Structure formats: C-alpha cells, structure tokens
Length: 414
Image (cartoon, rainbow, N blue to C red):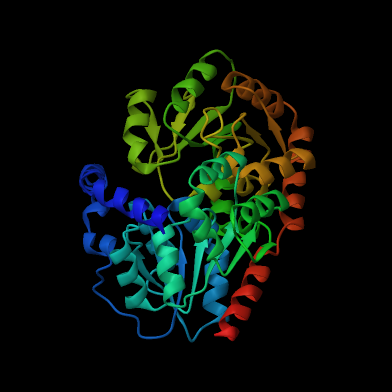
C-alpha cells in the first residue's frame, strides 16, 4: 500500500511535466491535443454493448495486435471492441486499420481517479494489454471492479525485468493481479512468473500470425521490377541511426538503391533534411531516378510494400541500444534480414531467425552494408534465406488461436 501511495504521489507531482510534454508533442503531431479529456478518464461516447478491450500503446503494438483483434471481432460479434492507445500515430494507425468497426480512445494516464473513471465508464468484460504494458493503478482499478486483464503476446527482456525488480513494491501487485499472461517464449514466461504473474502460459508471438497485405506485396514486387536494380531496405530506423547508415553507405560502392524508412513519422522531415535537398520521397509521389543512391520511404502503413520491394532488409533500432524492431514482417515475405547487436526487445524472434538461417547479425552499420552487398551479389543465398524466413513464420503461427481460447475461457467464467 505504501508503495502504491508513493507511486501515485509521484505521478501527481509530475502532472505539470506531463501536460507540458503533451502540449509540446502536439506542436508536431496535432493528435496529441485532441480529446485531452480522455487522458483523464472523461469520454464523449458510451458503449452500446458489452465491451472487450484491447490496449495497444503505439504503432508497433497496433499492428502486432491486428490478427488478435480480427479474431476477437469474429469470435465475439455480440461484444463491442474497444481499442485504446497512447500515441497519436498509434491512434491514426488504428483508424486506418479498422475504421468504424471498433471504438477507439486514449488510455488515461495512470492516475487513480482517471483509470477508475475509465473502467467504470466502459465496464469491459475482459481487457488485453499488448506485450509489456503494466500500469499499477489501472490494474488495481480493474481488480477492484472485477475486470479480468490478460497480458497478451507478453515479452519481458532481462533488462526490463531488472528495472521492474527495482520497483517490486509497486509492480509486483500489478503483475499478480493479472488474470493471465500469454508469454511469447519460455524465457519471457519465467521472468513474468518471477515478477509475480500467476497464470502464465507460452502462447507464442502474435506477429507470426500477421498475413502480409497481398496488394502491397504485389505492388512492392512490381515497383522493384520497374526499378530494374537491386534494393537495399533500411527499415524502421531510429534517431541517430540514419547518420550512421549514410556514413556506412558512403564508404561502399554498390548498384543497389538504399531505401530508407524511418520508424516514426514525426521524424520524416528531419531525416529528409539529413539526406539532402535532392532526396526523392515516396510521400510526394516521386520515384527514384536512375542515378539516385538513396530514396526516402516516408509513408505509414506500407511496410509490406517496402519489404516486398527489397532484395535485403537491414532492421533499424538495432545499431544503438534501443532493442531493435520487428523482423518478422521481412521474413513473412521472404526477404533476407540483417540486424545489429541490440535486439533485446525481439530476442526470441531474432534468435529463431538466426537459427533458421533467415537472418545475419553484425556489430555495426558498416558490416551490415558489407553483408548486404554480399547477399545482393549472391542470388542463391538470398533465396535460401528468404525461404527459411517464410518457413519460420509458417512454423510459429498459431498464437491467435491460443489467445482466443483463453479469452473464451475467461468470458465463460464471468
């Protein structure tokens, strides 16, 4: 109790900072300044049916949850599906993906009154938090009001577990209040149990169940054929990595077009400035010229297009201590993968890809470009790696069915 009180007191002390940050982020992303009341548990709409609630904090979780959300819509048609998120890009992604078929709202900040109002307003019969979302006051409110909550496609790296252990007085009750946790791997499950989660099962990674958009796959391959030269995709780069990649590209000679796709849309213009005024951008409807070495993929929701257009994909977020980004999308369309040393947020998937022969790990961007050039010159090896990636995805599908079976069991108990 003391730990929870201190946690809440710290949140209240930080409220001016929270509001200032919300206003500041709204300068570039106006979505942050819309429906601010929802951030504090005030909603303009009410559910018309019983609610199943899924929280996907941002774009990555929104896309990862897609097969589960679609299965929930099919399995429980008599329920209203409420999707919550925390970022403007996440909210926009949810709107693009589902339109009016679901309800979308901000998850409130973890203030006791805010989360209590949220739970009392929607009264969800079941909640699912994607991957690593643990909010002590939210889970306490759900427990008090009898709402079972599942940690879905749960991952827990050793570094994250270490951080949680330091605040065990606050987070252990939160983990123990979960109705269940569906871990991605045995290692994730063991760490969740250590942190206090009780009903933990290994259900796999929902990302393996994502089917690439067929129209985007076809369009990407057609674009590559039209281009008539190799394409090296540098996907989901984070701040600081683009400069390292550009410097590494400058030290090599290649006929490949480097297709650079930043992870966050609010950075598109800054990356374009780094690449130079002459860089051509997909968002403008432009195509690369024959002599271009760089092309900026500055659009959202087109990763299947980009991966299908590539001969080789380098995964961003892995060359600085950021934990990496999702490589399963590349494997699903048969594109060989290269990533750097930091992949702890995708430890299981990256280990599986390496073991399957679908990926290679390198220490830095210079080595990534060298390995990519070698693969571009070796069609047979590329095809072997691509086929290995597709077999890997086929082997590990099935997480959705396990999640749905658990959801059905929990709803039947109610």
